Image (cartoon, rainbow, N blue to C red; front, top):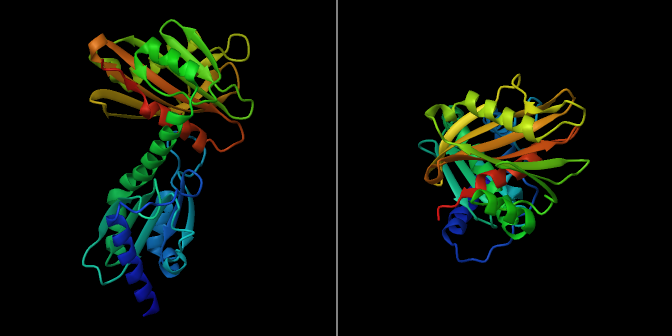
Length: 327
C-alpha cells in the first residue's frame, strides 16, 4: 500500500510538473550521457529492468570496442527527491495491472532544464518488453538528441571565432567550431581544424566536391571519396603513411533530410595506412543543389586507451548543427 501511494503521488507530481512550463526550474545536473532510471527495486531486478538496462547499455555505434551508449544509475520512486530529480536524462518505468495497456511518453524540462524524461508503463512484463522492442532505438535517440542539442547550445556561446569564420566564409555554411580547435589548415576545397591535444585529439574536417551523379550517395562512393580526400590532405606520422577508413569495422550508413536537403551519414573507424593509429569518426555529406555540390563535415577522435564516447559525441553535435547557407 505504501509503495502504491508513493507511485500515485509520484505520477501526479510528474503530470503537474510537465504541464506547468511557467515555473522557473533549476539547471540539470550530472555528466553527459548519464541516464537515471527510476523504478522499484523488484522491477529493476526483474526481466523488465534487465530489458531497460540492456537497452541503455547497448554498444556505442561505429566502434569496434565495447563502449556503452550511456552510464546508468538507478533510484526508487521513494528516493527520487528534489536533489536527484534534476538529473539531465531520466527514464521512469512501472509495471502494474492497474494499466490497461503499455504506454510510452516523452517529456522535456519536467523538474529541471534542459531535461529529457521518458516514462513507460505497462500492465505486465510481456507488454513492457514488447513495447521496448518496438521503441528502443527511438528512446535511445531521444536521449542522444537531447545531449547533442545541449552540446550545440554550449558551442553557440563558446567557440573559436577565427576558425569558425574561415570555415563559414570559405564553404558557405553556418557552424560553430569548438573553442579548443586552435589549429587549422586549408587545402583545395578542404579545411582541417584540430585541438592538437596529446591526450585526446579532436579534429574536424570540411570539404566539398561537385554533385554530378545519383550514385554519389552510395556508401562505397562516399567512403572512396573520403579516402581520396584524406590521403591527399592528412598525412600520417611516419613517411608514406596517411589517413584512411578501416573497412574491416563495418561502417554504419544512413540517410535522412537535413534542413530540407538530402544528407548521408556514416559512422565508422579511421586508421592510418602504414602506422598504428585509429579512432571513431562521424561524417555528414549534404547536397547543396543551388551550387551543384556536396558539402562534407566530419569529426574524428584519437584517444588511445581512453573512453571515446563523449569525445566523438561532442564533435557529433557540431556535425549535426552545421547548415548550408541558403542565402
